[in-house]
Image (cartoon, rainbow, N blue to C red; front, side, top):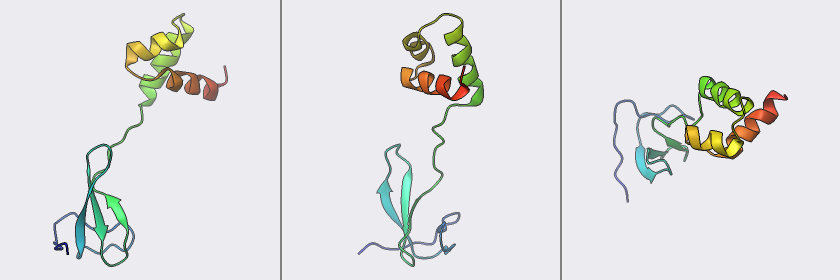
Length: 93
């Protein structure tokens, strides 16, 4: 059986309980997961934001319209070409 700890800053996102929180492994990006023993909710401490900023999106779209292919834009910015094509669909141009 896992031991529970009361650690500052660790509280359940569902029931807001700060006690009976235990480690529950790590997620795909490597951040710590926790589980509340009271309600059974599994949550991530300090989740990482994986989205691209709006500035990078606009720059990638402008680069595409300046004559670079979608694959080329992906290589320049280090992202998938599917991201570029999805952003182009959303802009509707």
